[in-house]
Image (cartoon, rainbow, N blue to C red):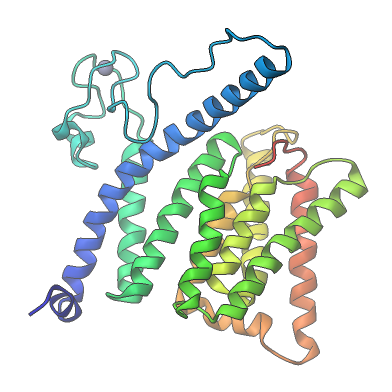
Length: 324
Ligand SMILES: [Zn+2]
C-alpha cells in the first residue's frame, strides 16, 4: 500500500499529519515574519547607498553587508542575551510550554505570538486537509494558506505586503489553475486582472476625491493573487467580506480602544482572511449568488460591495505610503 493510498483510507491520520506539518511550518513562518521585513529594509538601504556613492563619485562608502542575514542564517537566538536556541527549544508550542514562555538562559519572556502563529498555522492547515483530502489541490491550498499567514502578520506589523510573496502568488495561482485546480485558466487570468484593477480604481478615485492615499499597492497585488487563485467570481465576496470585517474591527478599535483615526489600519489581513474563507467550499453558494446570476439582481450586491470598500477606505485607511 502506497502512502497516498494509506492517507486516502485514513483521513483522520492525514489531518493529524498535516496539523503537525502546519505546526512546523508555523515555526518557520515566525522566522519569515520577523526577518523578511528586516532583509527588505537592509537591501533598500544598500541600494540607496550604492546610488549615492555612484552619483557623488564616493568610492569608499561601505556598501557590503557585514554579516549574512537571511531566512536561514544566522541561527535563531534570544534577542536579549544572544543565547543560541537549541533544537529542543525550537519544537512548536511544546518548547514554549516547557520553557514556560521564558528564555532558558536569561529568563526573558518569549512573545506569546510565536506559539499562537504556530497553533494557527497547524489548525488552518488541518482544516485544508479536511476540506480537500490528499491531492494536488490540498498541497496548493496549503501553500496559499501559509503565504497568506505570513502576509497577514507582516502587514499587521509593518503595513507592508512584500512583493517577494504577493507576486509569486499571482504566478502560482495562474500555474495551479492551468491544471484547473480551483477554477479554469481564463477565469484565473481575469481574476488577477480584475483583482488588481478594482482596488487600483478605488485607490485613484479616493485620491482624486480627497488627495489622500487610501491603501497600499501591495493590497492591489494581494487581491490580484487571490483572483488568480480563486477566479474573478470570488472577488465580490472577498471585497465585501474584507471591507465589512475591516470596517467593524476599525470602528471597534476607534470606539473601544480609543485608537487614533489618523493611524492607518492594514487592509491586507482582511483581504487574506476573506480570500482564505473563499477557498472553503461551503461559501461557494454565496459566491454563485453574488456573481453568476444573469438577472439584474446581481447589481445591488456589486454596488454595495464597492461602496463599502470605498467607505472603508475613506474612513480608515487615511494615509498609507510606500509602494508595496
Ligand atoms: Zn535570553
